Image (tube, rainbow, N blue to C red):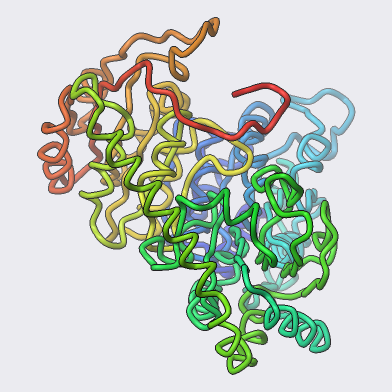
Amino acid sequence: MFGYEILARELKEWGTDTLFFLMGGPMIDAENACEDIGIRMVDVRHEQAAVMMANAHTRITGRPSVAMACSGPGMMNMVTGIAHAWSDGAPIVVIGGASELSREGTMPFQETDQLAVVRPITKLAIRCTEPTLIPDVIARAFRTAVSDSPGPVYVDLPGDVLYAEVAEAGVPSRATAVGPMRTSADPDAVRRAVDLLAEAERPIVVSGSGVVWSGASDALTEFVDTYRTPFYTTPMGRGVVSEKHPLSLPGSRSAALRDCDLVLQVATRQNYIFNFMQPPKVNGSATLLQIDVSAAQIGANRAADVGLVGDARAVLRQLLGHADVLRAAAGRHDDWIRALSDRDRQRQEEVRRSTQELPETPIHPRVLSQELADWLPDGAILSLDGHEILTMGRQFIPLTRPYSLNSGAYGTMGVGLPFGIGAKVARPDSTVVVLSGDGSFGFNALELDTAVRHRIPVICVISNNGGWTATDRRKAGSDLGHMPYERMFESLGCLTTRVETIDQLRPALDKAQAFDGPSLINVITDRGARATTSTFTKYVT
């Protein structure tokens, strides 16, 4: 066997059913071999999009997905996607071709120290030096991606390793079952946590995307129901408990964080999203219980009163093993829930009134978001991308399933369409809608060609406000004009529509839903509409 044939066999054995890639040397015959053994091949127009598609695909399927590109510039084009996956904690395997190992240091074609580039943004960056080692390297990549805190792994494959020929008998497959390790927390720590939960009067749950990776959505929902506690999530962790749940109170989020007396932090990092769990955003005197699969994350920015090191689903099940205590404590939360519910209703009413007062044209992004929320079928997957529309989409479109796709903590623009394509490939029977700003859409807009060629019927809704961010103050380079995206992509075979009044949106969405291919709805929105966002640097953004 040639090295490239071993690589294809191992990917197939590890359960790879789809490969996101852009063809090029020295990976061409590896890609041919993957196609020959029945892996679905989705070739893209830019390498970063391949990695982003793999990210969404693994988020939906729950198993590691694979992206591949050629050496040098091709591999370097994947770096943004890898960095985003690192921030997301997405367990993907990224494979890059490399110049000949035998010529290392002599300046062969496209020589780059690719490992040095990606080491800071991967769980593991490894080079395969012998074709007989390919099964071991691929096994290590898949296992590392899902073990402990999940994340991306990069594999460097030199051309002379791929094209070396070895006896088939000397390279047995190393593939085994792969999945999250269901580690449980220390029982003593669980008992201490339950004692503190029993004493709290104003508890909240704060959760993140680790709930998605551990498949803990049902367990978290059961905990919320049993203990009767309001819950709040990071953007990438939304939908793990339905946001139509009666204890989903987004309008009282700030008050809940500020006034709570206990926080149960579940599978999310203490980063800027919740101000590092520090006051004034989060009550400094509140008890902090922290669940994380990685011991290194416990108390990373704020010390935890009890650290529960283990898989989120397993630890939540341990807590639910004390359901009688949790139910008995739930009655202590009535006043707390009532106060937050009243505040949430007040906030929702303020939003409703202010929305009614908005002018009909140009369309306000908030109105666009709410209209889309009313239209979305149950179980639809939404991919959000941009700035103003990203924030408003997060605020005004409730999610009921754990398929939240957006720019995440890394804030990467351009993820919307690749995420949507990856999600649709993973779940072809679900409606997949990309809601993107006009600027961010432009990063990977030509991936609509990928969707056309592979007959992937994603629905792209563009909030086109004619530039980068709102015109609330002077910003050099922010003006793009209202690009006629509907004319640009009609010629590729997309169903396209231009929407200038909100009553035109639903008919356009209905037509897109019925169309057997990708569609684009270019919605002209208010350039002056400014979303309310958090200040996460010393500059106001």
